[in-house]
Image 1 (spheres, helix red, strand yellow):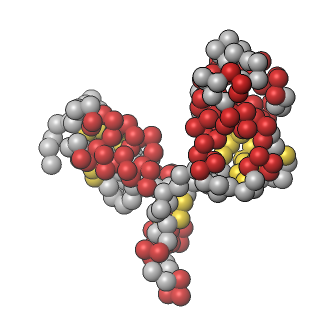
Image 2 (image 1 turned 30 degrees about the vertical axis):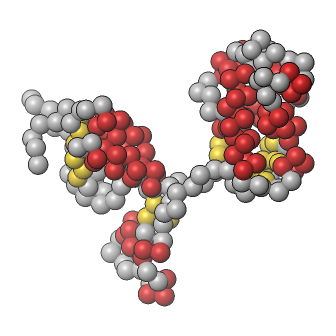
Image 3 (image 1 turned 90 degrees about the horizontal axis):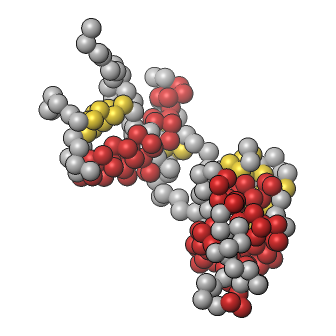
Length: 235
């Protein structure tokens, strides 16, 4: 291997792999190392042997459990976090009536199909779909007030679905948020009641692994199973 690199990334979690992939695409020489013998860090998906090793040490998986390759166990839960609560998505096939989200603890979070109907029907070039509102002027906060969404729902829509990083969007024109939500609503309709969330076939660990492969394509160097992986500075 080479001895000089522009960037050395320690750990192959999702953010580390995204960073390594982007830097490699940008032309930098990247060395990516991990003390584990698998990719993904806390975001990994383990096969049966890896899972057994992580939690049972040198014990071997029980034979009746079958092939190790048949297992892809996510180390991260498959839930959305909204307003400090874990939320699962429950979607009835009749989206116009029964679209709702429910907290894991059973508390009600969201049951506002009206908002999704408005977003899905909204056409920027057709005033009939605007319900008298100019979304280039009406703030997201005012739009929310008109539709009547509670704080939990606003937090969920703004951050978990529209993917806004902070709450500045509330005081900005609502057109951007509606456009973001429209993409979600269209994907929801396309799945006809099934989940619109994309899930990797071999577990969530495929997400960091995909960026690792991207780095590799652009010349990145990967070294896993390096338990002594550390940074040492000259005295």
